[in-house]
Image: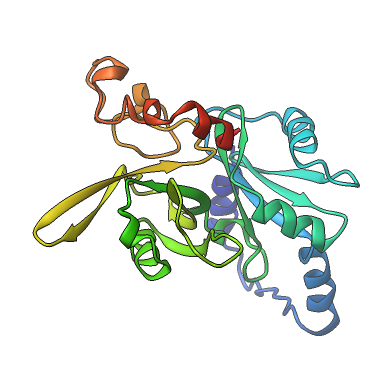
Length: 250
């Protein structure tokens, strides 16, 4: 019996003259809770099978390289609470993502409200995104900002020491709604010409080659009809990355 089913059964029990016992979280109780939550992140691993906590702990400790060990508690359904020794380490991990476990995306977020796990949102993750084939005259911050907004919420645009964005590609950190298909290309309209600009995602985990969504494999996709990976809409996506770009993704 899972936790949600147990809660439903308990709520269905009605006793005669039963009083509703309620505790109001306020004052020192709330302050103590907020102090604990300040160094915590909650995360969900987008895998359809269960995740072993000890395996996750070992993998994340190696990836994050924190000074002190991160405490990890399972909250059920591949959701985990990560307690850091300091808020600084928590922020560094949160901003250093996206992170993976067993080639699946680990969606991390800060606790919201009073930390009710059922109310936490695991719909957005920040990626460094590359937009290629941008005309030189369009490599200005304002245009790159607009291009990034077609993909998600722009958090940061990489520039050189002079503040310019000119280069082989534009590199933008974007908060992306992972419940939607990943964008493969954005377009620029200029003097009647429509210029396609490929979009590449750094540290992209395994995703569905049928629907371009993160969180399941193509064999689990409702759109999968037995075709080979190469014949799927997004099957050859990552092959467009050059060896130099692969070094950036490592």
